[in-house]
Length: 325
Picture 1 (tube, rainbow, N blue to C red):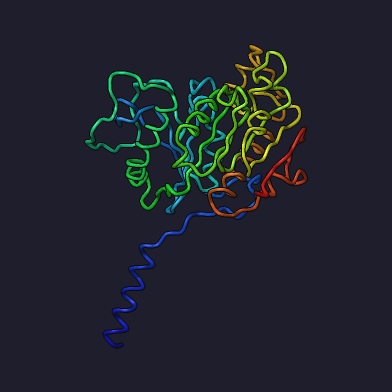
Picture 2 (tube, rainbow, N blue to C red):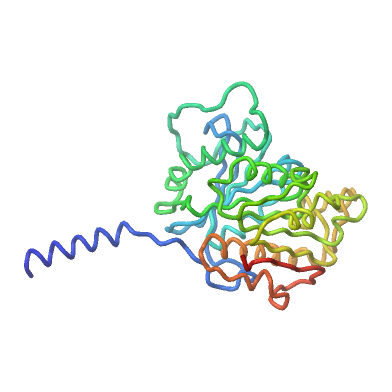
């Protein structure tokens, strides 16, 4: 074999070894993701992260899109207390999912990685939760891949494919963040949202793919969602492309992990659905959220699992979309 052939093969091997394609889930999202998932936590005290987090990631070598999530009560419901089932199952479809707890925490991380880095935080709180969330994004872009590599060799995030999603009043933070700076976000999902951010008739006049989701009981007494500030209103004031779905016989707390659901159900804090279909509902909601981000971040560009009612494995109350921009 000639020297030129050897050099050419060596060059090809280097190029191939250094190229990693973004993971794409091509299966039915309502059947669950195929990837094994692990998690670790990040703390303000040990990791100098702006807010405490739990990170779910596919425990298999690959390049993945990334999602940042904010829970209810303006982020006060911690991801590891209320949303572990949802976030871990979305991650299994090929996403690194960071659940951001928008309240201070002094716990310790479980990642085992120690590193010296300059602190970007001060003793004074930031001007707004939206600014804090942007700080969180900046921290993650600088440091998250190092933490992931420390957990499982070869796992990394593609920051060109970043999405944000939220539940309840946590969506107020997400929406305000997008209005403040949408530069690093490619798509967003609002799950049973509550927000004043678009009150007064203001609208989103830029193009950012968005999902708005609601449930039948959410607007019932004790009004855990408020008409005029929830999914319908955000949809009406959002630009194309966008999709909206509301499901029958479900309530605001049904998205939560079962223990938190029980608390909500027994205290009647929000009107809930039937406990007998909790598993069925969670299978649906993980698939619905995943389908949206598979379409907008993984490049599948097929919204059929979002817009074709026959493909949605749960009772639909209302469905509409505007994707022909």
